[in-house]
Each structure stands twice: as C-alpha cells, then as structure tokens.
Length: 251
Image (cartoon, rainbow, N blue to C red):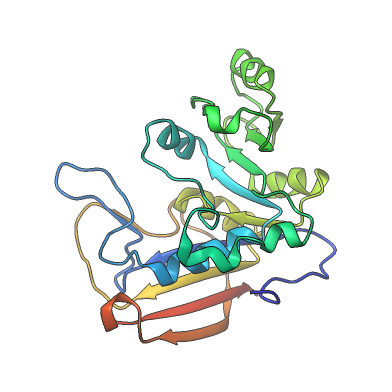
C-alpha cells in the first residue's frame, strides 16, 4: 500500500476515488428509490482500494449528506478495517505510524442543515466544517458549541475548492482524500486542486435514466486535464467480468 501517495510535496496532495460502470454510472436509482452505488458494480476488491486510500489520508472530505445518512442508519463508517476480517491486515497501518485510528473529517456544507451523530461528537474524532461566508450565524454557533470548528472557505453560500484546500493546509493536513460525491469533485477540479483521481471501471453496462456520474456541475472551461498514471486489469472482480483500476494525475 505504501508508495501510492507522495510524501515529499511541499503542499497538500488532494485525491479522490470512484467506481463507475462502463457507461459512466457511479450511482443509479431503482424505480421509486434513491440514488446509490449500484449493487451490480460494488465489490470487495474495489472496496479494499477505497479502504487503502482512506487509511493513508490526513483528512477525509465528506458532506452533510453523509452525516444525515449516518444518523438514519444508511451509512457505515468510512473505515471498516477494524471490523471486517477480510481487511484485518490493514487494521494496524495507522497505529504503526502514530496516527489516530480514524483520519479527521472535513465536512463540506452550504446549508449546515445536518445532524451531529453521537458517534462523532464524543471528542475522540476530529471534525471540521467548511462552508460559505453567508452561512447562518446561529447554526455556526450551534455547531461550534458541539466542538466542531466552522471555517468560511468561500464567498456566498458555497465552498471554494482552493480555499478549502488552503484551510486544510493551515490545519496541518497534507494528504486530503475526497470521499464525497460528484459535486465536490467538480468543486475540486474547477479550482485546479485535484491532484489524483482513482477510478475503477467495472466491466458492466448499466444504463438507467436516473443516475449520477463522477463530476456534476457547470461546464468546466477550461477542462480539467488529467494524464493516465497507472492502469491495472483485475480479471477476478465482478464474478469474472473484471475491472480496471486506473489513476490519473493532474497535468
């Protein structure tokens, strides 16, 4: 696992990760259901990659939606290496390097309308919230009273990708992993701060009318150029359909 991310950069290294069908679906919604990672492409071999990437992070970017799903019982902890026997060989990685069991969380939210899960409010987990300068002051006070600092990292309601990364750098975070969705990826790409994108291409076509792809937002002009850095063929994933593990670096 070591060696996949650089150790010698002066500033933060920002990376993200998605699994996609061949026709670009990272999430689909069944009839009458909500968008979610399709069961047809989710698989343990890609999940292990996600765990390895999250383990190496100094901070993990997530969203208010994730917190809502935690409270509703729809989301598991981002790291499952401490509970999953199949990932037991990874469980000691952070402790061996003097790191906290779980990397800190950076919650990106424009509205600040999210609950504070009890599992994250004990003080054992470091959480910081990033929002826009127009955030509701009363809600900011409530969140900070729970022990989570709130940082204005953008003008208006939205967070700016460059200011987000600069704010995390000021807190001492170097390896910044985005586990958030396509809108956050768009924010990072449009600001020119996404250094590496890990993509798993599952060997299946899903189609469907209600879906998400891994970057969603206004047209990027200029586009965010990425160059292929690594490419591995996994013939064993997805019951033999196989998948490609690829990584792309910012040009």
